[in-house]
Amino acid sequence: MKYFELKCTAYLKRDIPFKEGFENISKYISYSMAQTDELKLLHEKRGFKLYNFGNFFPIESSQTYKKGTSYSFTLRSLNENFIDTLTLSLRQNINNPNFLVVETQKKLVKKFFISELYSATPVIVTSEKNLFWTMQKDGDILKLQRQLHDNLEKKYKIFYDKKIDAEQNFIQLLEIKNKSPQNIEFDKDGKKIRFFGNKFRIIPHEDEISQKLAFIALACGLGEKNSFGGGFCLWN
Image (cartoon, rainbow, N blue to C red):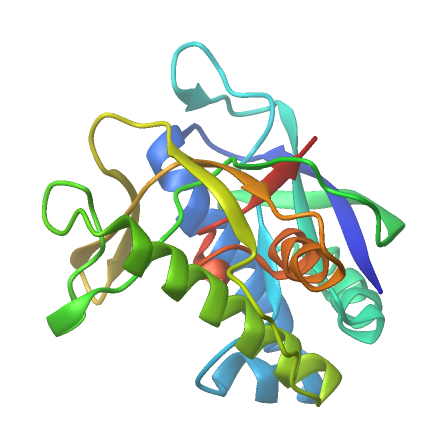
């Protein structure tokens, strides 16, 4: 198993508040995908996109990314062709009013042992009636773990075209790091949309299947709304 990571250097054309970072990066990627026939089909297709990204880095103490400054963001995918095709489009999006990708660095990451996962961006999980899972509204940790596990199994099956037979949930221990729900905010047709989620520390089991699913979480994102910036993970 392996995934491909693209570190992008972005030059900002205007100040961007921290909470608008996800939306700006997501729309930049979506527009770039729409410039090629192959990626346009993926962009318009419903369901898993099998890529994810983190917010701008480093984070400014003022919570505002500054105009005229360069920041980086990281994008990951299991699909090398996706990364290679997108790389060309990202740097051609010169008319974007918010920022411009001026440099990209591609990296191959082979499967390795993961002792811990940390979600750098909110992990989004939909509960009943299209509500988002939060400790305050739901509180069923076992259900949360099942949904996170099932989501990763589906991503594995879609990419590798085969089912993975897990005998146990890949999560050995899950710790919620936030006191109140985190959110990713978007503007759609003039209306503000918020996806509510949580920051997790996860210790996966050591067996082969659990480790494969933990690796999928790094490659494609943990939980839902990964193409909006949800569930981008780091590891130890």
